[in-house]
Length: 249
Ligand SMILES: O=C[C@H](O)COP(=O)(O)O
Image (tube, rainbow, N blue to C red):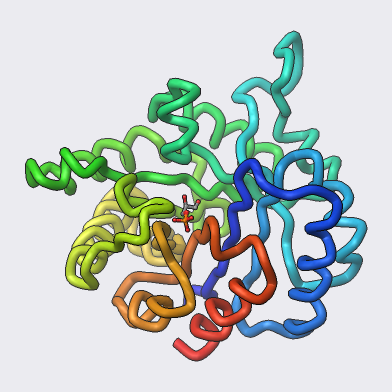
């Protein structure tokens, strides 16, 4: 049985004041029946881990380098994330694929390094609006999935997040049928590649304008094991109803 996961991606938002919201979230969910992960900006990883103490909330990074160390100004390694107390890392988010020219191959290399360092990798995939309108969605997702996910993946170290680019921060979401089609497709591809054991144990998240009002409907879709939430994860007030919806799904 896959344990559900509510993950928050703070993107380039948050200062030390945001730790108050994290503490509120932690206090209101002392024993969550789902996994909780918050990925703040790198500057807040260590303070967040310190603030949370023994809380059930996990902290993750938003990117890491594919090499273990070296002359890479401005970059952060998987080992550094671990050292700061992170247990997971988001990789291949469409915003990084677009503005940092990340390819599925570079995402796979980062994921391999992160998994070796003991991090759970949340690998993001998603089609553009033009690709969906051209009915290329499953081809795009299939290619991104096969190229971005390393062979070293297991049900413990891999989570895949389906995030249609046009749904991110836009208030638009795919229909439940559209989400279900992609998630069922990803599940069957993972089972075919890794076998039914691993293929069925990888968690599949939906991301893109998830909020309190649509969370329940999304979590009722088959093969949706949780969400990767951007804007609505920034405050405890907005994220709490999404967690509650997942706990009730
Ligand atoms: O990583 C999170 C996604 O990009 C979704 O962001 P959003 O919930 O603000 O649409």
